[in-house]
Amino acid sequence: MAVISSIRVNRSNLLRGIEYIYSYQKKKGAPSIGVWDFHNGLYLALATYRKNGILPTYWQELVDILWDWQAIRGVRGITKEYIFEEGKKRMDKLIKYYQKIYISSNKQYSLENVKWNDVVDLFTTSQDIKGVASPVFASKFCHFLLPHLYPIIDNTLVKGTWNTYHQYWEACKKGWLECREKETLIKILKDEIPGDVCPEFPWCTKIVELCTYTG
Image 1 (tube, rainbow, N blue to C red):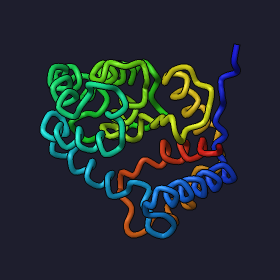
Image 2 (cartoon, rainbow, N blue to C red):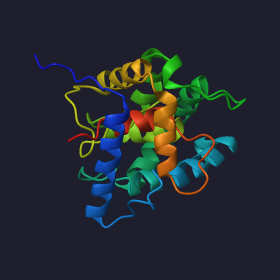
Image 3 (cartoon, helix red, strand yellow):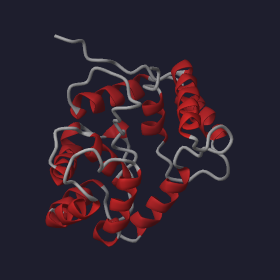
Image 4 (tube, rainbow, N blue to C red):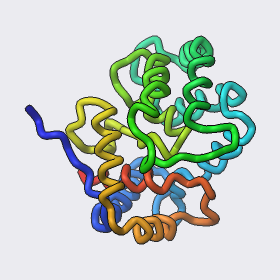
């Protein structure tokens, strides 16, 4: 049986992850050092959506973002239109599970103080939208809804031996809880982001994610 990867959230892995993502961006011809904002602009937009009721008001915008993030492509017959309609079919459930976590008072939880049982229903309902075993789509979609609670798993960037998103999620939580230099790591990443940082920037999940970019 394969050993499940652990995630070491520390200064060296974060710096390595930042360097790795800069290199990855540069190879794609995308913004890199000094310009790349680690999706800060997106988090600003998503924070506005949440205040105005992210579901179902901004469902089309979320589908467009998922397309841009290549969370929809890769399976024949699955288009933006397909995802839009499948999401609409499940909108009542999505809203129910979303509101169960994110209260109308805009209380924002953290990966530190929730359990998998608190977040699994929203994840599995999201996964049903695309209807594939891969957790990539659901992890990205849930991250857009609640960035502080759902670390993104990406087959290209994230390196590890997790068989399920649940295993990855638990490894992310454990890695962050065991980190003894959180404020230092937040400052390191903040210094890399040009301009003003979104007040709701998901430091925990973004830092943990970057600490897996060691391939």
